[in-house]
Length: 196
Ligand SMILES: *[C@@H]1O[C@H](CO)[C@@H](O)[C@H](O)[C@H]1NC(C)=O
Image (cartoon, rainbow, N blue to C red; front, side, top):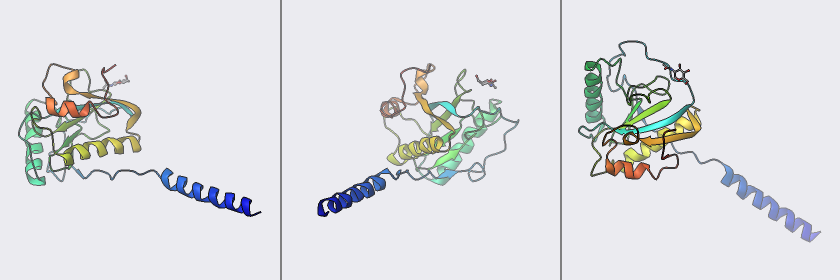
C-alpha cells in the first residue's frame, strides 16, 4: 500500500512538472507601430491580396540611414514610403520594417502583397531592417523584434509552418540585407539555402 501511494505521488508530481513545462512559452508579441502611428499616407490603389499562409520570408535592409527611436524611425519610414510612391509603387513596398529601436513598423502588413523583390512578391513577406548592415548588425532589440514578428506570424497562421527564410541577396544581385545581418539570419531556424 505504501509503495503504491509513493508511486502515485511520484507520478502525480512528474505529471505536474511535465504539464508545467508543456505550457507553451510564447515570446511577447512585438510592438507594432501602425501606419497611422508613423503617419503614413494611404495606398494609392487597392493592393493585391496575399494568399495565406505565406511560405517565404525575405530579409532585406533598406540601405539608407539607421534610426534609434520612434521619431527618427517614423521619419525614415515616411521617407521610404515617399521614395516608393515617387517610383510609382502603390504604397511603401515592404510588408514590415524593423527599427534599431526594437519596434516593428507596419508597411503593407501580412494580408497584402509587397513590392520588394521582383518575381518573388507573390507568396513572400518582406521584412526590411532600417539601415545598412554590411559591417555592423542591427541592435539586439531589432533582431528580437523581427524574431517575435515571425513567431507571431506563425501563431496567427499568416506564415506557413514550414516557411522558408531567405536573404534578399539570395534572390537578386544586391548586397541586401548586408553581410553582417545575412550572417545572423543564416543561423535562424527557417533559413533556407534555396528559394524553391
Ligand atoms: C499569386 O500566386 C497564387 C498561387 O500561385 C495565384 O493563384 C495568384 O493568382 C497569384 N497572384 C498574383 C497577383 O499574381
